[in-house]
Length: 500
Ligand code: PHE
Ligand code: NA
Image (cartoon, rainbow, N blue to C red):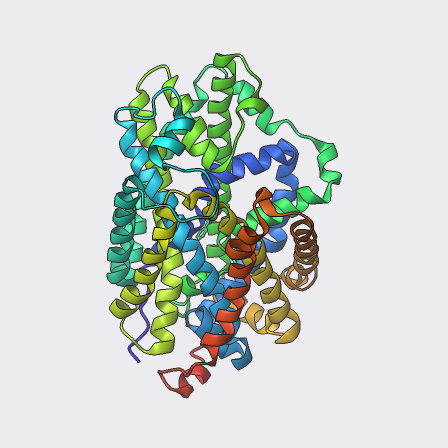
């Protein structure tokens, strides 16, 4: 086995972790989730989820990677042979996400290009579905490939794989060193412009207006937890993989707090920017905020083009900035997702990075073509929903229970991180991971299960949710057991290597 690769510097690692955390979710998911779940009052469950689950799990995963020095499967296998499957389960989840996350980045590339001539015209919604995605009647059938998505998708994969070929230091670290500062600058330009638009205060008022009553509703708390997992990229192999490239003495606790607060800072800023712009739109078209507030695909590819049309000047330029930000935030996250299985393949099958990138990245790129078809949108919607709710959230639950209660590894992890870190974590950390997080994630799981067993997600047909929802979530687990039954090509003794 070759020496494990390493980050060139502490800043390089932190930037890469921030690059992974800051993604599409910060820009199009957080503002809307916050608005829907109590506005200013949402900050309370949000901070609670961040401090009791997000940061504790981030510290746990950073420590696991640094201590056991492996991809997610190797790390779990070193903790306990019986736990290897959990690492592959997480990798399967990451793999699924990469197949459609890449497609959304491809859309954003197209829209960056469309910005130069505001090609979406007066009817951005019609443009998105008819002219751009060419969606036809009927759900779940594979239409033909859409060239407008295919070409940027090739660009996305070529860029991502090129960066991964270069390795940890010269590829991932360098890319994040360039892309993250660029993203922040571009984003600040948008936010400053947004705040100076007429009507901005109306939007901010709607965004921050606290609905204290809402806090009594358990679903608001569940929403906060769900968002934190997705937003911090925890519980699916990414942070374990990235921290496995840390030097043996690197500080963990500090890095975890910096990563988490940067991610939150970015999304709160995004909330401010997005709602300032929505306020502008509401005021200039004489409607309420409720009529224009949106999240996800609708916000980015329908509402934003509409707003950009009515900007008081430099319309093309702000379109370019906005979609460019989506591309940068997306690419740096995609790199981190694909690296999870590149690392896993390398560790388990004892192949070079180049081969692992070709096999893993190539396969994901190929499957992503499914989502670049005329009916890819509905499939994407269902896959995303199920992999989030029955992939990330459930693997988060299984992980904390396994580490806290089954393998009882938390004391060892706590000792380790306190040994290498400047400031120490106390018993609050153990309590959060053993008690608070499992309870809330448990409630969340039961609630999700009941909701989805009583009615089909998004009113899709039963066949459709079984094919693109349930079976994908279940297959990810099966995949975990199947791969972990295969032999380690690097020899068994690699599993007992504990380097620190
Ligand atoms: N943390 C990312 C975001 O907020 C989400 C993400 C990252 C999802 C990496 C998958 C993989 O958008
Ligand atoms: Na995020």
